[in-house]
Image (cartoon, rainbow, N blue to C red; front, side, top):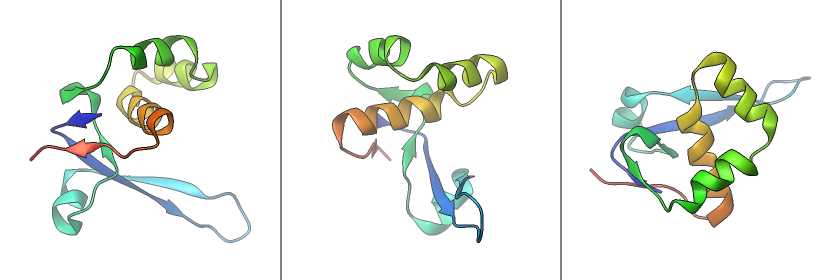
Length: 92
């Protein structure tokens, strides 16, 4: 996945409970110089990933996206990274 809008996420390891993911916006990328997600609103990827998103991604993720009308870009970025084993590429 190649795109123009980078974001970052990291894992907060909470003692005695499950780990929690934290999402950082543009300023997190700006200050740290690192990113882990490219938003799909300005990205290129092969059309086969649209089929994976629709037909093979866990229904619970699609249901969350539909209910909240949000996070489809995060789901797509993780789906492509998981399918390819490669990180997204940010084009500055």
